[in-house]
Each structure stands twice: as structure tokens, then as C-alpha cells.
Length: 304
Image (cartoon, rainbow, N blue to C red; front, side, top):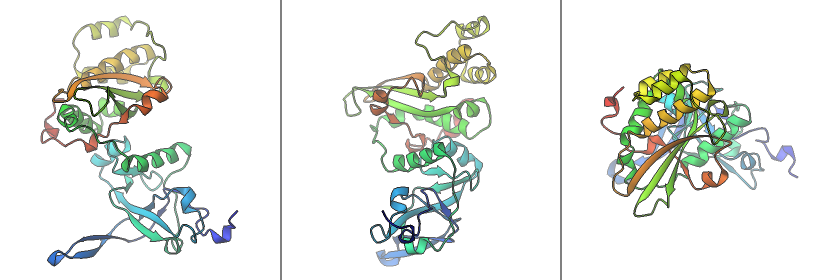
């Protein structure tokens, strides 16, 4: 086993933050030549996996860091919900501080150890979220081109609402992730897509047969309530049975904004808890990253 003295970063972890003042990159300079650039940043965030970070520099001499950035709240809100995989949260630094995964720089461990590390987060859940964000950034699925226009209005509404503070923003914060499952597969000539909203266990009845809703909610759902009405009713509901019915109708209304086009034949919606969503389905689906669908010029024109 390696001695601690040969592992100067033995106490460091992926997601640690250092107060480095600048970040280096290479751009195109005058005359078409490569040019080194130096940008001011709030710090560096280490994204090297912990197991490699702590190893002796003789076998793993370098680490990878990305800039620490502070976002305004309109960007921080959807980033916290996982809608912008460019950013990975570092909540112990600040609620609006994130690792910017769009830029990366390799540094020598001998340099890195000169800095004092601060934890970007604490706890197993936050550690898993950060690691998953890094993995997702560099391993996203290439969706069919036709999925962009098909989800345009859906994406626009969810991103716009996530940036706000109303009922839909509160409900989107309860969504762990959105999984997109193709049938038969993404490369097929015609694809049927199911969007599954993964929720916490206390949001849904965990049975195949959901009991009937209360008379009040049943009357509401017998009509044609709009998205805003569904969201406001769901936020105030105390009954898990009623919430299950409302969640099913709300995600159907959200996904109803989609317009299948080209190879995308249909788009359906469902809700599930993490316990109910099987490993098989998880492997056969992909996390939907709303940031990486083309941004529409009508983002600010989505009906409330």
C-alpha cells in the first residue's frame, strides 16, 4: 500500500475547490496561430476521480480541474435541477456556485498541492450527484435530430418555469430526473418515446392500481384544467393519492406540448418513483438534458 507521504493529495476528493485566480485555455490568435489565453475565475474545481486523485504522483502525476463560476439566479435555478449538465453544483461554496464542465485544464499534482482545498459538498448523495454530473457531461447520448423540434415547446416551458418561483418551479424541484426511453431504439425509422418523470417516494402511491381520487380532485380532473391550475392544486395537495392523480395529469399536460415530427412518431408521459423504475428500464433509457435541445426563439413566449 502506498504511504501517505507519497500521496500529497491523500485527503483530497473529487469536487474539492481551490482559490486559483486564473484559468488557461488555447484559442485562435491573430494570423491563425494558436494562442494561450488566461481568464479570471473564482477558483478551480477538481473533477478527477478521487481514486486517481489520491494516488502517488509517480503513477498519476496530474489532475483535471474546471473553473468555479457564480451564476445569476435565472441560470442557477435550472442548473440546480439538473437541466443544465454544463454545470455541477458546489453548494458548500455557495448556492449559485458551480463547476463549469465546458472547460477543463490539466494541472500537475505538485502545483495543486500548493493550494488549500475546500469541500464543494458533503455527504454520499451530493458526492454521487457530482460524480454523475461529470460522467453525464462527457457521456451523453446523441439523440435523433428530430427530437429537438418535437420537444421544443415542452423544453421551453420547463426551462422558463424552472427559472421562476411559482408552483411549477416548486414541482420541478421535486423531479429527480426525466428519462427518455425509445421504442424500439433511437436509430429506428420511427421512434415512440416515453418521458418518465422520476419522483420521490412520498409523491406517488407505490402500487399499480391507484385508489380513486377525492371527489374534489375527481371533479377537477373530469374537466380540462390547464397546466397552471394542475400545478397550483398539486402544490397544495396533502393527499398522496390525489397527488398521484395530479402528477399523472400534469406530466401528460407538459408532454402534450410536444409535437411529434419526422422519425419521432409519438411522445408519451408517465411518472414513477426511483423504487418503481427498474434497472432494465434505466439501462434502456437516457436522461433528458433540456439544455442540450436547441433553444427556441420563442422561449419567452410560452403561454403561462
